[in-house]
Length: 140
Image (cartoon, rainbow, N blue to C red; front, side, top):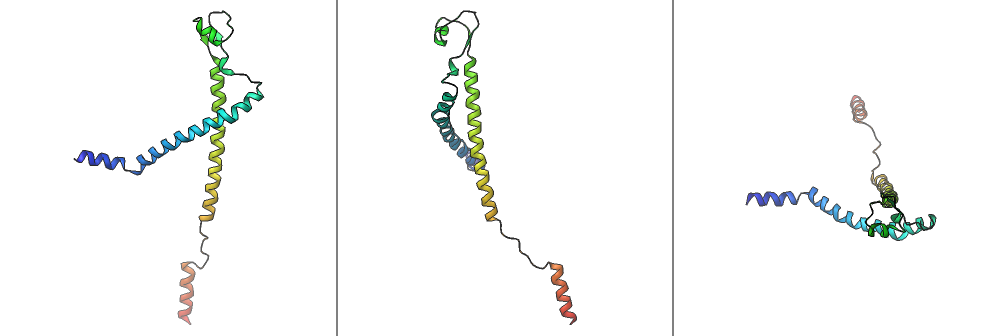
């Protein structure tokens, strides 16, 4: 019985619940970012690059020439699909930029909240000044 109560207490700690929440929200945010990249940004990149599909770019290791990647793979040729690396790199840069913009906006919003929430420092006499005033009054 002690093992299960300790296990339950461990699961109910804030760290584990916060981590679980972060994983769920991170997964949902990942879908939003993927959709933004695939549905909004990549069509614009495609326009800029003239519609080049990098995922179809490849080099054959056997020296033969093939019409496209599918034909090379059907023929059983050993290929290096360097286009996938290029596409993954482009996706990474775009996603990193997207996340950076979101985090920067969140930091600015947090700083604004901190400025508003910070109470004004009380301006008044220090303890020493008060004691001097009391001493002076007692002398009178």
